Length: 103
Image (cartoon, rainbow, N blue to C red; front, side, top):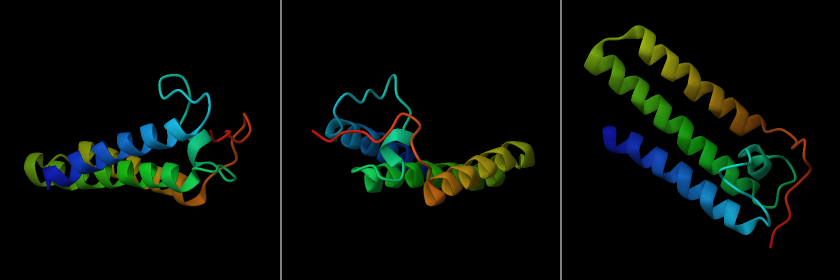
């Protein structure tokens, strides 16, 4: 199970850097991923995929934490984070800075 969580984190960052490389002027250090995953973005599928990978990593980690540590607080927090990220990914938003330009 821990490999699934690690894979989710890795997929998130691969998705961010891959989508970011396709957008002119995007910086993973300075910009939010919302500009990549927002409605109307030409790389929205990559951005949404990255967010869903992050959500999956949170959900798997919540399960592992519950089983290993029996900590309802920690696993519940991770579960809420995973569900929240899934909601953001599925429902999307418009980017306040406008849609990014693809190179």
